[in-house]
Length: 193
Image 1 (cartoon, rainbow, N blue to C red):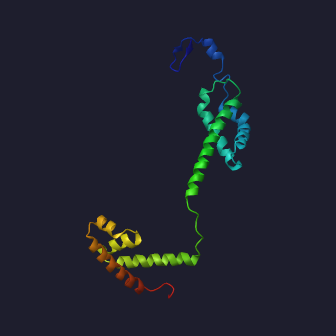
Image 2: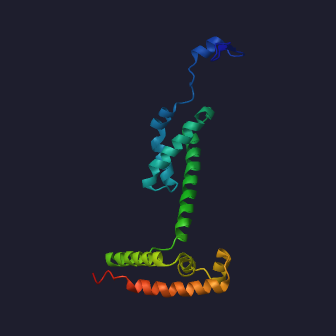
Image 3: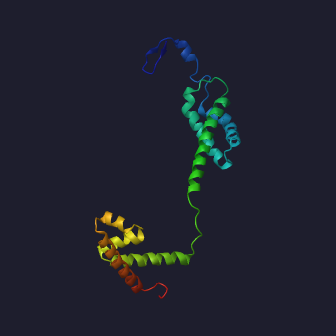
């Protein structure tokens, strides 16, 4: 009988056999697998369509999976067959991930032309002007103005959201637009400075 971790004996295994045979007689260590087969795995993933830039990461993932599965590897058959099966699965997962990323990118609209520094400054000035004008509006008019003219909500939606009569919404909006125009025109332009 062999001893277990607690010092007891495991039935059915002779003590002499357990002591004479190394624990991993037919199962290589991960380091041995990597040294002997990393090149093979790299060639396999490249032939399965993984770019050269990504091949090293995919190879590392293959050996991470091999590390997790090493206790289940019984040493039957060539290690290359076992590693090939793992590489095939990891490569398939990698390629599916790339396809998902490409589909997501197709949904994103193409970026417009780059803004010139003058355009960027003009937009920043416009934003600052709008913020100053909004700060000058009375709260009830600003709220309706922002919902209508900035957020794009319709009068009935605003009336529902604020629990106001529709006529009150339109009245506040009309007053807010007038005041906004007057306030915006009264601020000094950045170009004149």
